[in-house]
Image (tube, rainbow, N blue to C red; front, top):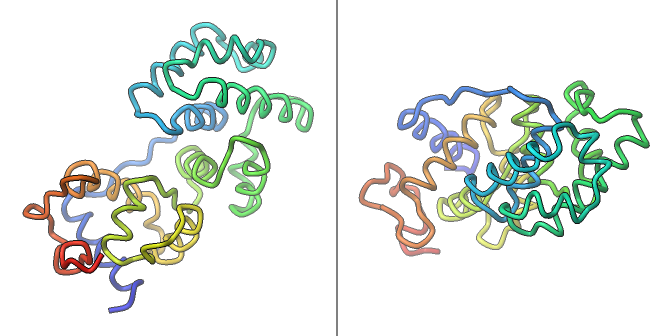
Length: 220
């Protein structure tokens, strides 16, 4: 079985297990980007708390732009790495206003995917994962964000090499992913990683994919 065939099998199996998740495109593209920056190296609860406090103190992105980096950092402290993330947010908003005259990113949804990724990734603090999540969730672009769950599972199942970097995995997983399935496959892999294929104590007795798992067979 080729890696592409195995990926199709995994995608189909997870859809049978979890169904096809709905795509939620609520909120602006810029909202999604800032939320995704805050999600870096933290959990959803702390991310959401940091975002809520940020929006409470600075109701518009223009307000955030006019604020000092220290003020932004204090607002998002709950999300962790507040000094680093506040600089990334401030720098991005500053450049966006200079280059486009207003603080909105809706134009990314009309750009070619590679061009939109390049536009976002040129800014410090925005890597391939953050850019991919933004384009997938806010614009519906066919990209494949790779988080820690997906990287772990993809290696355990032998979809990607065991030494594959997270950055390279974004490219490989998109190539392997069945056409049109990037979003549901991404979401189902995350659910699978949280519920069954845990990092420390995977529930292999509940897993429908053990026949195709290198980890289960002791080969990883």
